[in-house]
Length: 577
Image (cartoon, rainbow, N blue to C red; front, side, top):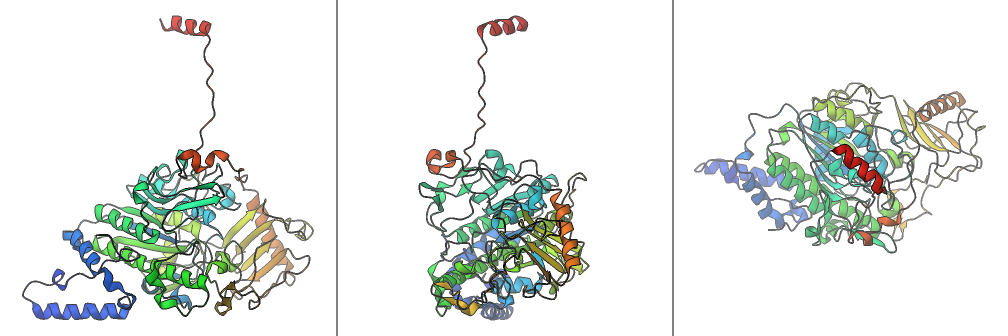
């Protein structure tokens, strides 16, 4: 029976699953305790009783595997969950009005990452996670990979799933790829994943799984491995559909064998769509975009609860490491909130790059703690390979660090700086110049770097307002109620002490020119290692109309083979004799 809730939420097992027949007193006590727990947890009031039959079915399918395995692998199961466009404030433990009981509970029992950075948009964060390299070292330092571009994550980069497969991991991806697909070699199953179920593009309809990139450029975007998943064109909400697939993968996998699950949910990226019942608790939110966004996030929170339940049900949880991260900051015009941070998605202000993140695992040594050490999304690559007992080739120049001891034991982070990016082809700041950069750096170029407590931005960092929650009106964030900053004429350099001023309210560039120069030199050093930008023009062959109505690989090498002349053919035949 198909689940009726957002994420296929399974209901509680019967008390008989835990007690022996005849022990009615113990059964009653356990049943009472279970009901009390659920009431405390808060999901009964959200209509979860509708899915009671599904959870019983899930537990019944598990059968004997409810018992912990006695011969588990020494390699941990790695579960990486990536949310899309979740704002810094948009989690309960950051003060949001949106209820996220699952995220709050998992984070409280694990380690909250409160000095954690990603990239300001989709493709860059995903590429850095899967390669452990900054954008300047993969050629993806400008914008995102567009659906019509003959571009993808460079094929000469060893990906995280490829490295995990080398040491015996089963690797599965569910959700949004957004790392290019113009050639078959760019597809997820060719980049290290045993299976792939999800979308190739950056966004699309949550129910129909169609995406229009421009008028006349529309197509279906849901894949099962290397083929369009037409069988799933039945209107299932993607958060639910992806969670069901995760449950199926776990149900069919042997928990004594290590597994890597990369779950890249589409939520809460626009378009703003959610099943109706998730709006119930947010009728008081006036702004329609914020209300829809809240419903989507509540649905996502419930889905993650079901993923966690499946890990426990099928015997994975005790040897698993669950990492949760947003891919970038929230977009206020699409319902997200980064308050009290400055800026939004697509900018190098803290609101665009400082992310919600935590690690939850029975394997953590210091549970229930907060990590304020510097952590970046590139760090997951070496950290997970190390946890998997894998090897990183000495000739590979990574930008990430192994930060497991920092997270698990509270040790100092090996990371002291982050290159947020250098984008040489982004719109230049009109007032930037080499002179403004003391002859060290052209401040017209968009760039941002963090070194210990200091953060430097040059060029055009992007939309720089602070958007308080109360500023949301029916028409979106009300610009009249925002704290707006008019950038000073001639301004192309900013310096902040992020530790003392995480909200970027006090520019110190004029007060500390020596520190500005030091960070500009560091930018210059990084830039010397940059590879050329990969941002090709649109290819008309990408149109889904030419590919059966589906977004998918279209590029073929145009190599014309010369036909051998008759004389050459005779000579070759003689030699063969």
